[in-house]
Image (tube, rainbow over all chains, first blue to last red; front, side, top):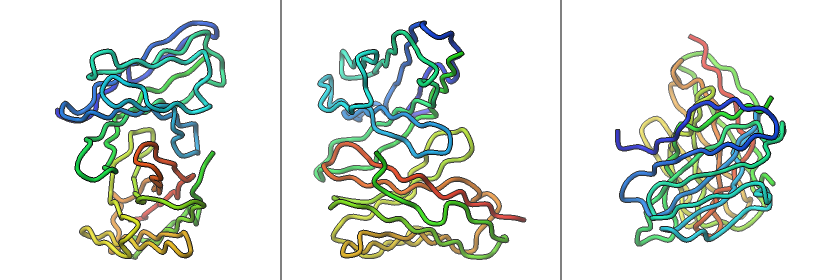
Length: 116
Length: 110
């Protein structure tokens, strides 16, 4: 499968615990994005990388959230001291940086986080 | 914050009918994209229309863009039960983040 993959698909944790999600983008894509989606809403942007550089972060990304893409390939999103309000679907997307500035973003299946 | 607003929030039609969904947005854009999401799954890209384009077709999909009114519409012709999903418009302002609307839930009854 050459699409975007995310692991785990589901995560249940207790409030106060730390969680880490992984995203593997499409191999030739150098841009990687994280979004969060709550029930009944559209996805909301969290952050994005071009290669290993984190270029933009949303105000939604509090200091409990950190994202990395150390070698410009896969990325991890860590949430520390989880709160019930963090329960959501976390979506990863990737896109190539082509001649056109903007390109289609291809989404993974998401990681559904439930904080008890 | 959500930039786009989809209209209607929910749409129920019979198989074979056409479905039209509308999207309005607030700022200037580079492009507008439509995505489909089946319940609890990831998003599937349907079509991208750039700010200098007015209409685009892909199979049974037709998208229009009116930048003067800051609005777009997605038409699905000859709908099928498999088209049942949530449909989102997303705007791209700076070639980085996408800003999504709240989506239209389409139900196609067999």
